[in-house]
Length: 80
Image (cartoon, rainbow, N blue to C red):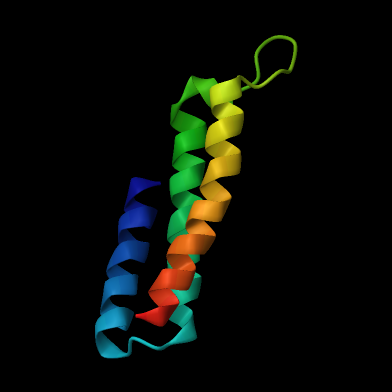
């Protein structure tokens, strides 16, 4: 998973250096964000449900807080 994330980051930097206004840059940046969220969910037990199927409050905060952050970062990246 870390290899895939690093490959996406390298591809993003290559495409960003060649053409900064390419729509594919935003798509790759979105995939990077999805892989980071996936890594957080897999590696931190706060995000996994307990025996009763309830996710902790910190897990809900991380999941719900990450989507607007990714959208904000993508919108800023599209301007530059």
